[in-house]
Amino acid sequence: MKKAILSLGCVALCATFALSTAEARPKYYAEFKDMYPDVAGLDEQKCNVCHEGKSKKDKNHYGMAYGMVLNAKNSKDVDQIKKALKDVEAKPSAVSGKTFGDLLKENKLPATK
Image 1 (spheres, helix red, strand yellow):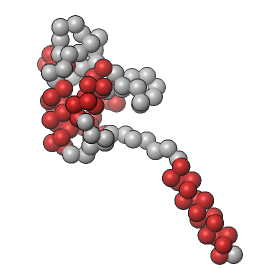
Image 2 (cartoon, helix red, strand yellow):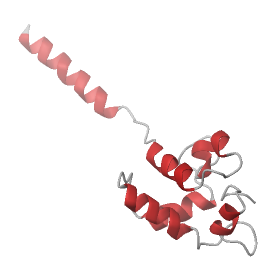
Image 3 (tube, rainbow, N blue to C red):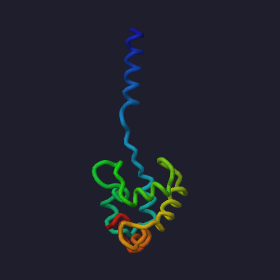
Image 4 (tube, rainbow, N blue to C red):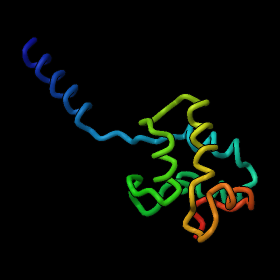
């Protein structure tokens, strides 16, 4: 009986680790919203500030640039997140002749085309 319970416990533990977990980063969105509260459509976009399509693995131009500037996986360091948000402002956006910072100053989403 002990072997059966132990085996069942091991199977349950392995199944738990095998399941894929969501890697939501609400801290990134919260800090973005804190820094740029007047951006039009922000509440509707949420994760799509950095992502596009159905998979969260698909990042838009802003999301890719932010990821390269942040250079950390799932950072929870507020100062690091804010610094990356500030630094990515200087990067060129998908809008010809405008940086992400230019769009944000116009209260537009940074992935605006």
